[in-house]
Length: 433
Ligand SMILES: [Zn+2]
Image (tube, rainbow, N blue to C red):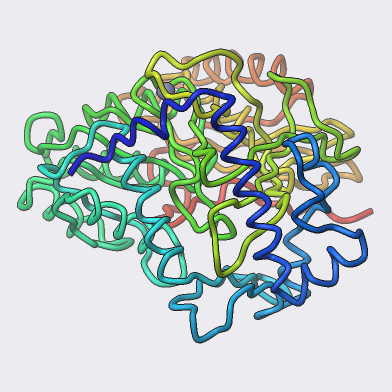
C-alpha cells in the first residue's frame, strides 16, 4: 500500500495554513464539549469565531500535564464515553496519571500517521517489522503495531525484554526493521556479537526506528555501525496519541511534524512567548484532527528548535531538531544548567568507551558533585597509564562542554546495571541543603 500521501505531505504553506485554521476552528467547537475546555473557554470568551488566522492561536490558553491530572480521568472527554473505544494512561509516579481517550476514528488517524512515518523512512508492505516496545498502556507498542499493519508490513509484536528471543525472531523471521529504544539497541547489538552473530551478515536488518529516550547523533551513528542499519529518530508522547507525532525522513536532518494533525509552536518556557526560528524552546502542540480528546496548546516540556528552510525530501511539513531533553530532565549543578545528552555526546565520540554510562549527583563535604561512570568497550586495554591518559582527555572535553569538572570513572564492561527498558542515566543523591 502506498503511504506517500503526496498531496498532504508536500502541500504549500498557504494551503497548510488554511487547512490548519479550518481544523482549529472545528477543534475549538469540539473541545468545548468537554467540561474542562467548556469552562476555560467561557472564562476567556473563546469560540470558534475567535480564530480568523493562525495569529489568533495566541489568544488560546495553554494546557498542561497538571490540567490532565487535575481533571482525571474524564474531564477532557469531548465525546460521550460510549463513543470512545480505547484509553491510554501514563504511569504517574506521584498523584493521578494522565488519561488519553480515543474514538475509532482517532485510532484510524493515528495508525495513518504512523504508517506515513514508516513509509517515509523507506518501509513497505514487503518489510518484516519487529516491535520491541512494551505493549499495553505504553503507546509505543500498540501505536507502532497498528501503523505497521496499516502499511501492510508483516508485524512481529515481540514486546519488551528477553534479548535472546528477540535475536532468534530477528534471525528466523527475517526481521528487516526494529522499533527499539536506543540504549537497548546498543545492548542488543552487544549481545549479538557475544553470541557470535554478526548482524550485518547474519540478519536482514536494514532500518531501525529509535525513540522514547533522548540520544545523541554519536549514539545513532554507533548503533548504525554496530547493526549495519539506518536508524531514524521517532518522537511520540501519549498525550499526542503516541508514536507518529514527529519522525525523521531519509535525509536524517530533523524530524517532520505532520501539520495536518497538529499545530506546532515553540515558546520560551519561562515567558511563554514564541522563540525565533532556530532558537531552542519548549514544543507546544495543538491537535487539530482529534475527536475524543482535543488538546489546545499542550505544553510538552520537550525542548527543541525549528529547522529553517525546505527539506530535500520534498515534504513541506515543519522540521524540529532532535530533543535536547525535557525541561524536567535538566540537571542544575552548581548553578549550571545541563542535559545528560551533552555528556553522552562527548562519551560516544570515544571508541574506547562502551554504550553504558551512569551519572550520579552527590553531596560531598557540603558541595554538590557529579560522578560519571562509563563502561569501557571490550576492545580496550587494562593498561593503567593508558586509562589514566584517556580519563584526562575525556574529562577535559567534558569540562569544555559542561563548564564544570565532573569526576570520571572508567569501569569494566558489564559493571554498570543493565537496563532492558528505558535507561536510567541519572541518579540524584544530593542532600537538599
Ligand atoms: Zn524531509
